[in-house]
Amino acid sequence: MKNIASECLERVREEKPLIHHLTNWVTIYDCANIVKVFGASPVMAHASEEVADMAGIASALVLNIGTLTTDFIEAMILAAQSANKKGIPVVLDVCGAGATKFRDEKCFEILDTVSVSIIKGNSSEIARIAGESVSTKGVDASAVEKNLQEIAQSLAAKRNCTVVITGKEDIVADEKKVVMVKNGHGMMANIVGTGCMATSVIGTFAAVEKDLVAACVAGLVCYEIAAELAAAKAEGPGSFKEMLFDSVYNLDGGTVEKMMKVE
Image (cartoon, rainbow, N blue to C red; front, top):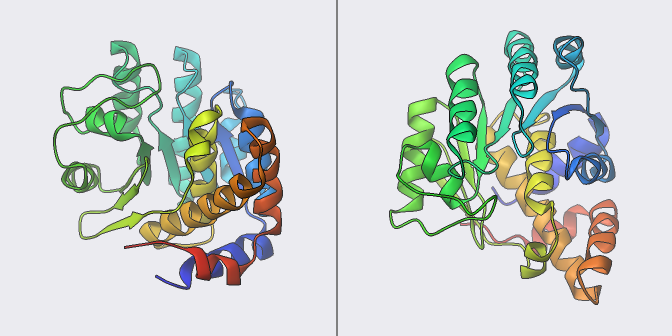
């Protein structure tokens, strides 16, 4: 696992995969930018008339229900069906799951209709999708009493996918293994969009690495090391966000291997 992050970073920059998004309108600009500065190519097509065609030429599909509507979910399903047919990874950010009945229903509609490769969310979002009785404060995590690693693996087994729980320490799990990512910085919690950007990064790295646990770990490690580097120079949330993009752009494999914290 030690070299996978730097290797995937190099592959992203060499292959420049096209990452198709149907994502959160609040953070769509940031999601496009983070993919671009990593070296990949973002496209944010959402019209139902073209999503299937766009997914058909992409290397990964990222879905984020942060600003969901019924029409938007229908377009997500069309895009995911096309992605499934092509055999590219589909990443679903269950943003806000546990906050409302409608949001929960639409998450399950997607999961029951198409094959999702990676489910990503915070602790309470993932717990709710795993069937636990928890609530989410808008899009912020609330307390989950049960073991998060067990929840992640149980959901991964049930949905035949990889599960990512982001937080102070990130959990990446499939049915057989769990990896903890301990990079990152508290400043990330002070700006809107860091979670959505993480989903886009995961999709970007999944586009170049078939081992999806390794892809998720690699993406999170690179993204969160860049956040550590940015926070060391920033004077507050505004400059941190600007420096985050610069730190990603200038990130090198040697720095990644030196700074990564994975168990």
